[in-house]
Image (cartoon, rainbow, N blue to C red; front, side, top):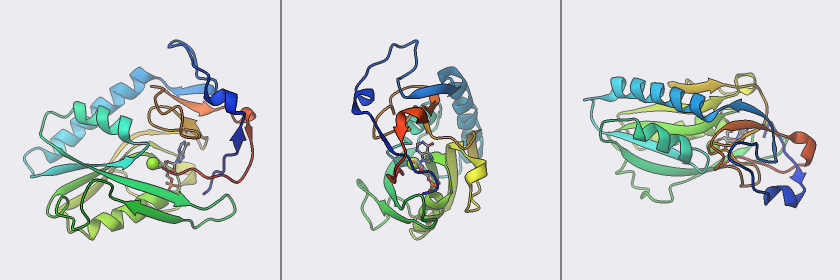
Length: 212
Ligand code: IMP
Ligand code: MG
């Protein structure tokens, strides 16, 4: 992966925070809850305009990180949609530029009947190098859908190595490791409703990976 994040003192991963203060791992708030909500509502409006009356729309939620964004987005849509979930993991470390991406369908059968002939909208938390998106888009095309579109709450434009067209984008952000609103550090902080920068002064640099 392009960004390698190391280890942190385990105590920081069990500390609670107050609703009006930052979680212990956040050095700076990048996007507040209300800002995110307003943008997600705009994206839902665009999606609604584009897909209304066009046939079956399936939101393909990329686990785990996109579950918050997907749920926010879906609840602003006033048309019937279906949901599918894909689990994607990336392997690699900071010295390897081409990692391997593994895709699983934990709840749908591999025959692809839930995808065939339908409009698929991938819902992803963040586009970093774009490798995950590239592999996932190709994978979904093998099921012969009517179309495949891509939405991401966040994109780090300076890091993009694969040319991915984002049909519905929440925000471009700087190349910093962020947590909250679905995004984790060490599996935690996905439940913090805003998005903030991980306090890397608390992190020992190492070769561990992220990517789900
Ligand atoms: P990509 O394949 O390099 O585009 O990586 C995308 C995946 O890496 C995302 O789906 C996230 O799960 C993860 N990721 C990238 N940047 C961050 C970050 O800043 N915080 C948390 N997860 C991240
Ligand atoms: Mg992800």
